[in-house]
Image 1 (tube, one colour):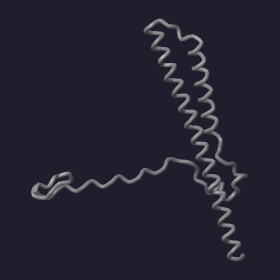
Image 2 (cartoon, one colour):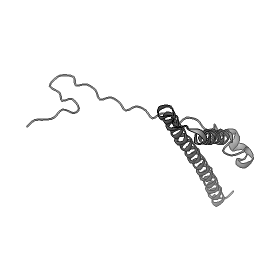
Image 3 (cartoon, helix red, strand yellow):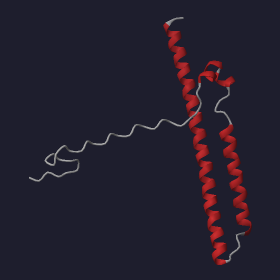
Length: 131
């Protein structure tokens, strides 16, 4: 295999990885939008219930519509979360077996706390110097 063939193959793999990453980002954005809409509906439903209890104004059909919409959105979210990002046939057998799958990102290390001054004559962080 020539050097140019290897470069071409590496470029193709990079392009496939970029497409896969883009698809995953789009999926997460869509899920976020579904969750946001469900949260907005739940908030509106809560206000209807408060108004019903405090003012006696019946929530009625509007509350029923919001409940059905929330249930529909939650079903869409569950369905989207259960779908694999890409099937093994699409990625190839090597990638399907080596992929660890989505998981929580490791937390960044906590910044080191500044060392306390060793004596009272040493300035501490945030001390002002008077001249």
